[in-house]
Length: 246
Ligand code: BJW
Ligand code: ZN
Image (cartoon, rainbow, N blue to C red):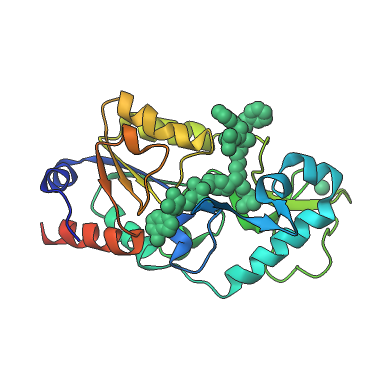
């Protein structure tokens, strides 16, 4: 794989780094992405943006749980890949490093990344629809939707569905990191979902160099300074090794 030497210079010079990841970084772990090759994930004939929506939680929570149970089943057999581990390693090289993810699989933490900003929540947690108490899912899967042991209301997945607000404060921290970084990496996202997709433009207009790691072009490609058209499981370990020999 060729990486432009101008980009390697930027990487070597960077002091403050912010990374935004999406489903593509977990693709090499065997986790299906949402979009790609003109396709969109479908569950029982329903496009994912319909089943993963605030409306479905209100109208058919049981169906939402079936969809999430199915995905928990897939994740059970998947592990973080070389891309996740490389990002945890790269973070060690910078005193100011922020990892922002749209993924709900928890793989960045499992690979050793710290203080990960999970913009869209985490599939391993449930949340009470009423009092918002959170529950770890491990070991309590049997008959969804379970009831909250505090107030008796139903539990829902603790993830951010279409039409829902992001976790309090999470996007604000991400915006701050995007504004102050000098290098912004966008990894494995189609950059179609807002407000996450807006972070790259925020970084760029604050003066950062924006770099995309994705085998395909995306909605953001035009605003990127560099693109590495490679799988993140290949590109990120290479960046980590470049940083390690300096
Ligand atoms: C590889 C690879 C490899 C493959 N290596 N790469 C402004 C404009 C228009 C609309 C809006 C807007 N602001 C808000 C909206 C509405 C909406 C939105 O963005 N809609 C657009 C789609 C039109 N946003 C929201 O509703 C958000 N909430 C919000 O804005 O709240 C404020 C508000 C509330 C109420 C009223 C008004 C305002 C919430 C968005 C939540 C998104 N949630 C989901 C589902 C989570 C739960 C679940 O998992 O089911 O999150 S949607 C889905 O998309 C998921 C992802 O995190 C997200 C992003 O997808 P991602 O990661 O980019 O994956 P893919 O599949 O799209 O792309 C994969 C990429 O990987 C591809 O590019 C491949 O090439 C690449 N790839 N292999 C590297 N090996
Ligand atoms: Zn409750």
